[in-house]
Structures are given as structure tokens and as C-alpha cells.
Amino acid sequence: MASAPTGEYDFDLFTIGAGSGGVRASRVAAAHGAKVAVAEEHRVGGTCVIRGCVPKKMLVYGAHFAEDLKDARNFGWSTENATFDWITLRDNVLKDVERIEGAYTNTLESHEVTIFKERAEITGPHEITLASGKVVTAKTILIATGARPRMPECQGAEHAISSNEAFHLDELPKKIIIAGGGYIANEFAGIFNEFGSEVHIVNRGDRLLRSYDEAVRDRLLQISTMKGIQFRFNTTFEYIKPCSEGGYFVKMSDCDEEKADLVMFAVGRVPNTEGLGLENAGVELGEGGEVKVDRFSKTNVDHIYAVGDVTDRVQLTPVAIREGQAFADSVFGDGDPVAVDHSCIPSAVFSHPPIAAVGMTEGEAKNQLGSVKVYLSDFRPMKNVLAGRNERSLIKMICDGDSGRIVGIHMIAPEAPEMMQAAAIAVKAGLTKEDFDATTAIHPTMAEELVLMR
Image 1 (cartoon, one colour):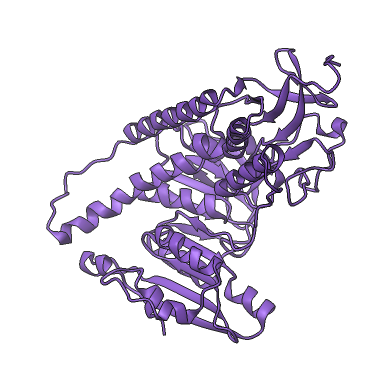
Image 2 (cartoon, one colour):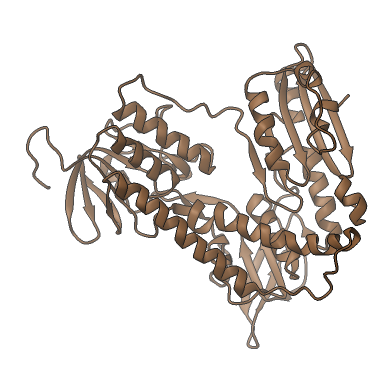
């Protein structure tokens, strides 16, 4: 065990993992005057920046041009000779990821945070051993190692890719089979479909996006089917076998063997807790391998904390950032301890078109409140009308039947996430339907439907 003078450590804080939560916690702790180090075995920025939200949203932007170019014709634009080059988009996205990674690194360095670009493991009380063999001590240890794609067990599963590899493909598949019914599966289904791939979504359950309101789930399924995406429910993989001329033979439980150029698994994520020495340190883990923490992100070991996806509370980047901020302010700040409120968190699915939601679904509200009033706006956006695109948007508002307080808003519409960010503030603040009704509409917009529902 490394020796350190009694009451003294090499660092006040040692963070394992430089993703969104770990970077925020490290930067804020350093700003409070702590001596901080962070270890990252991959790239600074974590899942969101390197292989998640940020590059995914760039691909979503690229995919939207496929529809925009078609729609532009009815607005007077000639786009018949437009072509798409996947490699150009891929390389430009990866280049911007490098830029953002550099910005994250500069943020840490400008706050004098020591960065170890190697794996770290807890090897004793307040002790961390790096892959190079270097041993350091820290008064407080923060686990912020995030999560990774879950890869199911089936014959030939090693031939499938996850969302991690989707950003690095050398060519687009003519046909891709995507396993999963969550937001990652639906987002990449929309992306590949817009780029011209034949897309099949295979789900072992009987529904998509289980945590979202039934009305918007059904609308996405309807629109996605119209766009040519094929769905199979209550289906599992039996095997994936390479084909000598390229691609794979795929057998699923409900159909004959078929051929695909690519298979992608998007069936959930697993907390990264293996090989960190947590068991030896006495840190309690949950059934899914997640680090168990209290409302202040502290584990059952007094000096070890955890934030972000590794705790599997709410696996969203802004939540990890808030948890990292709260941890640093609580442990290293001068004020009272701060706990993150995990209720009423808005979220989005960047499908085509996107979904956004905050608060309770209609089913949840009826179960919890009893008396519920539901308001619905089902409309065809003005742009779609002139473009000749037969896609209808849906905005749904759920209210407490007694007080009129808005307890949930759910929408599927172009730019739904942009509208939802502002609407979520109102729901979080406990505003009522009457408050929305008293607000004058901005016309013509899609967002005006939020204040015009009757």
C-alpha cells in the first residue's frame, strides 16, 4: 500500500472516468480549491461526446437533409442532382468529435486537473493504482465510468456491431437489422433509413419506447412504417453467421434465415463497474452491476462516490452533469449538501420525426392521480402541407383533473425537443392548463398548439 503522511493524500479528489459527469465534478471541485486528478482509459468526453449524443445528433442532421431536399421541390428549389457521400459526413463528424474532446481536455487542464490517460483501479483504502503501475492516494474517490452497450448472448453475436461502431463504418449497409426497441434503436433506424438502407427493427417485446406515452409511440410506429422501416415484435435472434461473399446470414425465432449486410444491437446499456476494485473496496453494487448510492451520490463507503450512468439512476447526459456538479459543491463547496431532483426530467428521442416528453404518461397519471384531464392536438405541420408530406404531428397534455396542474406533456413533431425544453420548465414549476391558456400564441408556429389546446 502506498505510504502517505497521516491525514495527507496525493489528491483531494481522484475521479475515475472523464465523461460528462466526471469532467464536471472534477472541474467544479478544482474550482473550489481541491487538488484533483482524473483517469480515463479511452478518450476525454465519455459516451456522450465521443460515441453518443453529440455525433448521433450530427448524423441526425445529415439524415434530415434527405427529406428536406425532397420537400424543397414544392418550395421552388431544384434538387434533382443532389448526391450523398457517407464518408464525407462520417469524417467531418469524427473531426468535430476530436475538436470537442480537445475542448473538454483544455477545460480540465485550465483548472489544473491532472489527467492520467490510462485505466485506474481502487486497490486499498484511499488508494488507486494506474495501469502503468503508479500508485496514488486520494481523500475522496469518484466513480464516473458510465455504461456500455449490452451485447446479448446468441450464436455469432460477435459479428454484430453496437452504436459505438456505427460512427466508424466504411460504407453504408444496403440492409441492416437493428435489435432493440429503445431510443438508440429507433434513432439509428431513422438515420440509416434516410441514407437509403433497408432497415428492419427486431424487438423481443411487443412495443417500442416503453417509457413513453402510448399515443406518441403509436404515431412513431405508424410514420416509421410509412417511411419503409420494417418492424418485427416478440422476436429473438438464434444465430448470426458470416456469408462467404460478404454480409451475414441471420436466423430469428419467427422466420426463415435471411441475409443482411449489417446487424446492430441496441438493447440497453450496462454500467461499467468491472475491474475497478469496487468489490475489494466494499462498495455495494445493485443487481445490474450499478453502483448503489444515496441521494448525495455517496456509496456505502464514506469516501467513495459515484455519478452518471454507472449508477443507473437516469441514464441521460444532463443528469450526469447535474450529479457531478452537486457532488462537487456538496463535498468541496462551502454551502449545504446538494441533492439532484430526479423527478420530472424531460427527454427526447431523435427519431424521424423526433419525440419529446416530460412528466407522467396518461397511464401513469391515471394510476397515481385518479382524476385526469387529457388534451390533444393532432395536426399536419404547415411545412408538411406545402411539401406534400403526409405526416401528422401530435401534442398531448396530461393534467390533474382536480387542480388543473399540468403533470405531463408528450409530443412527436419536427423540432419537438426544442419546444419541449421550454415547456418542461412550466411543468416542473407546477403551472396549470389555465396558465397556458392565458398565454398568447406565437403564430404561425407548431409550439402555439401548446397554448391553444381545448
